[in-house]
Length: 506
Image 1: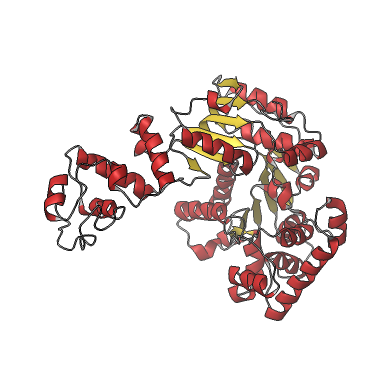
Image 2: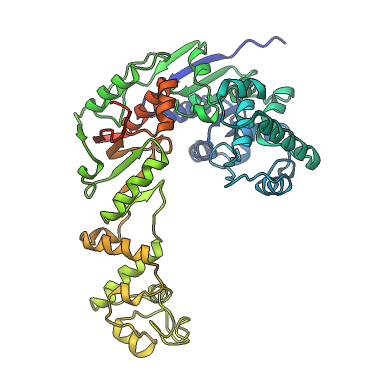
């Protein structure tokens, strides 16, 4: 039987227009029409996104996991269709073993469950070898095109060692899985296929996706070429821009960006030569844009903030400033200090104010005190204490070995390191009221903030020398990065003008 080609629908979603939400609505429409759930493919870039889509469909249509078998990343599709077991795929332990056996330092190995299952390392060689495969290039061609500051022989040696290790151990890496999938005839029987965040797919992933949908009737591809900022991981936005479609629709209403932000974003993106033209509107609110000569000029104490810089190096400088100012913040969603310590200081202040706390809180406090200095010997375990009652400073001093009653926390908590103490004191001096709350400031690189948003955004326009070179070589990419940065804003945007030679001019 001759199978006709699927109809291709491209959905372009500018910032804040609800791309994923729209895609999930379409999944629901298909299920409501009676398309069997096991004939729907939903392929997302990250495991998290694929699972969210799956959970939503399960809930609404009372389905089970096994019915939604094809809600996954492309890597995991290849894994499924090739019938592999986990022992046949390179694990973190394999990478460590390879690193020891061949004397190649891989640095931090992330298991990449967030990035579609790809294990990443800090090793330049392994990354470049993988990148050439993602782009579908011979290693020599990739090397000649990329002006890498590594020797060709060293790169070739690394490639041979890596291949030799995999053969010896009989394991595949994630890219092998994709390449093998393209060779097998085991294509899933799917009627409708959805692709999310299409601008981030590499040449190889595009091939895997089109192999997966070759028997389908309809394909929905959702993404935004203007937000394609992952070229360095192999993403091939040009493939997405060139792609022929039966229907192209644009989600044209942003629920995030005010009018002024939309106008600025539009000015930035118009600098990009090769893109899909699209018109969209900001929400019905003017918004604010302020320019500052220095980052210190922005008051971060009120409201919710997303603070972004182009690279981690620039973010480090910013982090030092925020710390000195005594502001509680997260960096890439992580606190710079333990939550437990923050709470323990809070509990101690309560005790000093004559309030009572429960046993768990007492134990947390005691964990920051040394025996014989802060508490008597043997009281760390609080064996005789009762968890059903509350404790005040007096009862702890009388019955539970507390020696430091009434002293300030920074004297009592002798086990806390000086850097943490300094930072906590700085927070206290700035009013201390933001001590026990979830921080409203998140520091992030622009790349890591993709998909995020905040009431207030501060954007540093500085570039490091390396980024400056990349701007000269590929100005479109840098414009896209700052376009993503600007469009995280829900209300006010604060632009810090370049402090160095050659920043990005907004």
